[in-house]
Each structure stands twice: as C-alpha cells, then as structure tokens.
Length: 118
Image (cartoon, rainbow, N blue to C red; front, side, top):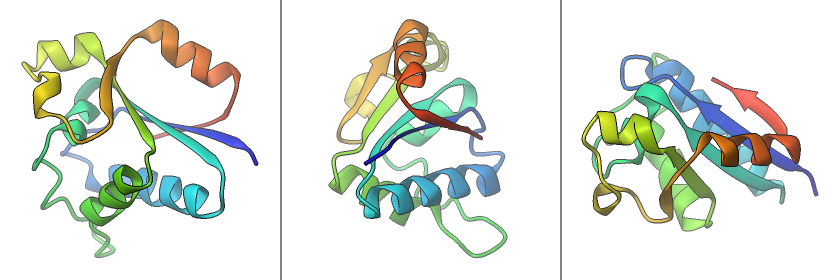
C-alpha cells in the first residue's frame, strides 16, 4: 500500500482541476492506498459544507460525489489554517473529518507520500 497526498490550491473558479484531484484521490482510495488531502489558498472552500454541491467540470464530472466518497471512507482533509481564517471559514462549517492544519504538517505529510498538486 502506498501513501498519496493530494494538494489542491484552486478554488471554485477552477472546477476542472478540483474535480480531477478529488477523482484521482477516490481512485487511489478504492485501490487500497492511504490518501490525505490538503487544501490551501482558494481550495479551502471545498471543505465548507455545501460549497462544492454544484461544482462540475466541463467533462460532466461533479466534485460532490467524489468528496462524499472520500468523506465516507475516512480520508483526512487538512485545511490551511491561515487560508481558512482569511476567508472567515471556521471548523464548524467543514465537512466531516476536515480539520485545520499547518504548513509544517503539510511538509511532514509530503515527506512520507507521493504528492499530487492541483
């Protein structure tokens, strides 16, 4: 089993990259790998309940089913603390399992995993 870290910085303005990141994270989890997701910059919006509900890539893929699968399968979502606070998001608004985290934790995760950035 491998470890994969998906780092997403694009927000609601780039549904293609976000949807693809969540899709690939889902595939990795389905294959039995350990998966973590770290949301930074505008991507912290994906941690807020309801904000991803209508996000769809031009291919027709929707982000929400992928996110729902990841949440249901206990994939950890780490949220950049200053990124979330700057946008006035708080943990009580987040999807299940999402938690605020730090740059130091991101680096720790990256040293132990194969990293995909979107």
